[in-house]
Amino acid sequence: MFSVTDSGRELLARAEGAVPAFLDGTFQALTPAERTQLSALLGKLLHPRS
Image (cartoon, rainbow, N blue to C red; front, side):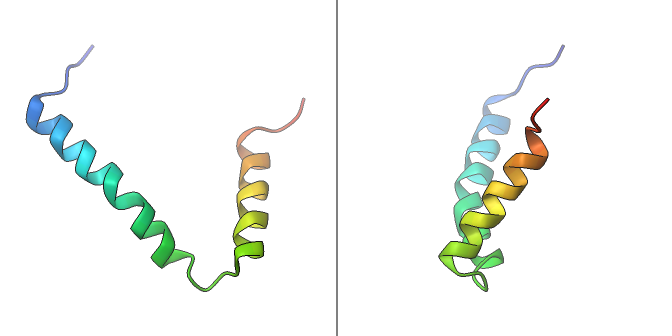
């Protein structure tokens, strides 16, 4: 078991807040349609049908 300190929670919140800008920059070369397709394909990998 572990616990997160107040400073750890603040750091996590800052990191989570940076994710959208990171993803926008990383995937800026893709069109909106390509981003949608990529998201669907990654979702399939993460949640395969039985």
